Image 1 (cartoon, rainbow, N blue to C red):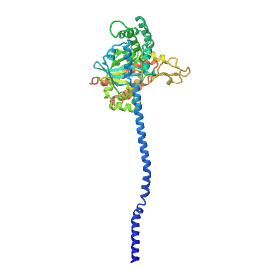
Image 2: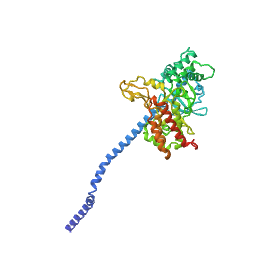
Image 3: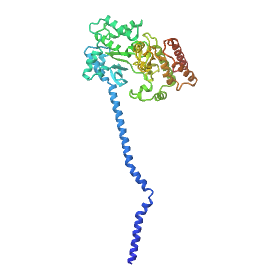
Image 4: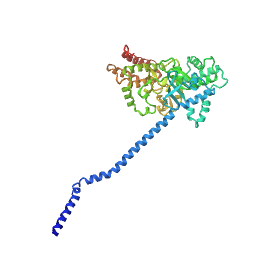
Length: 447
């Protein structure tokens, strides 16, 4: 019995041993996998935590850059404070100064600035949509905010000085226009427009504050161009000013790149720009109508009443239009008078053509022997506009027009800026393009 009990105990012990170890031996193939998985889990968790942390850090950095850049780009409040301070001191004057600084009837809305020195805002004035523009280079470059106002007063509103006669101011204005637009027979008439505009309060005399204000406005490239192109339908109309702050008609409807925030535009690759324009832009016939207006604008810039102008930043962001799809130039900041471009290039040292660039894309050839820039631009306005129109018009163009349109646009892009080609050849190419597009949309609702 004792032996039997011992044998039974041994059997029970073996059964317990089998129960305890049998299943583990049966899972012997899975054990190393589970162990290795458990071993890797802490490493995976660390990687995921690290990736999440990097994502949060990158996102925070982008938000910081966005808002720090936004705070530099959008400083309309600084502009208004500076302008109104000068107005209250009697240093400057203007047709909207009272509405801006005393009655507060100029409403600042969305910031549209693309550079810190040129503040651009959409706004509302007299129940009309307007664009507000003001330069604050001096204020932004000052070390302290308290120094901004006196420095602006000394630098920007320093001319004409007290005691200047109206005759001297007229001659001073004429000399300035000759230097910037060239020696043209039409300039005395433009001087008359400047003096008429300077009489903001319409009392038939120009005060020192009025003269200082209009002189400061003339230093703004876009204002000078708006003044020169006032008779042209494709430029925005001036509505009023105070010092060197001025209002124009509300910003025209733009292409998709123009509708994006200024900080995001450079981040989009050109292919995506074109795709957005094709997907979300106007229907092709409307684009054809806008393109005809753009070609007419090129004509306006070429040998207009006040000389020739060059488009030195030819991008879709500048192609705007009205509600009825008539072309409007969205921004004239990079349109420059021929005289100013030639003065910049004259005698300029260069090693390659890239050294002879005015603005973004007004480029002249480099004389490698003399190591000086030449005077004629490599690409005229029309050639650059045609390059733009290839991406703007060919996608979605009617099948019966696409081949001929592509051919004419290719011919147009090969035009050079040599003076010998500009007169007859450019006019012929431009006329053919306009005729081709107009035939397609004439006698339809799109015309």
